[in-house]
Length: 529
View 1 (cartoon, helix red, strand yellow):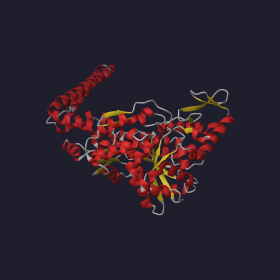
View 2 (cartoon, one colour; view 1 turned 90 degrees about the vertical axis):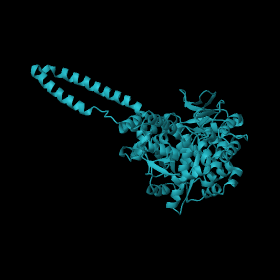
View 3 (tube, one colour; view 1 turned 60 degrees about the vertical axis):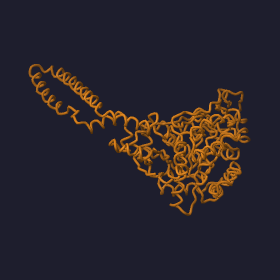
View 4 (cartoon, one colour; view 1 turned 180 degrees about the vertical axis):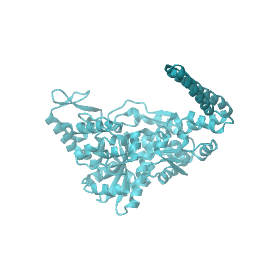
């Protein structure tokens, strides 16, 4: 593949807050830690050097992987290395989208792998492990129960139960058949079909199925996959669970930060609650709230705790306490020797709301890395772009703008009436002067007539442009089809399409090419063709 890179701001697809972060906006500096540079990573290593939970982490990972580790010497080595004080992680996280969901799921993991590789080259005396954090406790099933292949939506339509990672995949046979049936007949489609069937058709829960599929795709790069829904890992977090529920520390701190960000004109993504934990069992995941009597109850369930009973429950069964969106990042940094978090644009924005909370718990705040974002096409499409006198940068403009610009560049006629308006403007200057001599109050009336004429001239220009479009109809249709192909549903390709179509075309080379061309610390939008 060939690659070209453009600024994120030129895509018109990312929030102003993310762009401000990438630009180093001074007003945002209090809301993040070290800069995403090699110098920043050197300092971050020192901040995380006192990490104490390596033995527990390695033990849990070996338990979760089981025999799967034997299929990947690279991953097995990375798990072993995590026991060493000179080994650190770079982490990305995502929900358990079936069949990996949209393309950016893959892009997140590739960014982590490439960043770990770049850090090893820069700091050869240290080791860096790419980690995919499975959001197994998340219960937003409607966000993950579908994907799109060749524009067709494929859905696993069953009732949600508890955290999605605990859901059994026994009912997925039909949806697996539907997905695999879209792949066609080729060596690559057969390979992907085998991976998908092996993941989802063997009586696993969704967490184990996702681990199996992602491991199949990325094992040769040493990716480590973690499921934090584990009693031993929750024990490490239990003191913070207890303190935060009882004293509502995150609620006050995060909301204060959010208010400050909004005062400075930046958007916020999440809101802290008085209690930022759910009660989690195999049957349900429901919010914990403090009632008027001062007791803690589980919403929609007949479960209530006094303060002392709650403390006892946390200490005996920490696995039953599931962090929400504002506490999950803190949990992650407690149980991993982590240097950086790789997230999408919205994730980076909400992490900016969290630094003060990390500070009050004395947990090092990770370096924030926006995941690589990309568009993937082919030489045929690239040729069409150039034949239409467009560029990979200009193609991000709206369709109507591209079509209008094309007509203006290629028309045989002069479509603007600028010269004529300048002549009329001069005439109106004379008219206004004459009117003023007769009656000074007529000035506004003259301006009003001039404004109506200016509007009429503008409308006439639009009609001229519209009429001339008929002379370029074929090219304008090509522009429209090009936009539909590159921006399915009017948005970025990575936000809707599954990776399957690209894997069928390129096979294992697809991920290799992504790793080759992604540049995590350059912060540019990547176009591959």
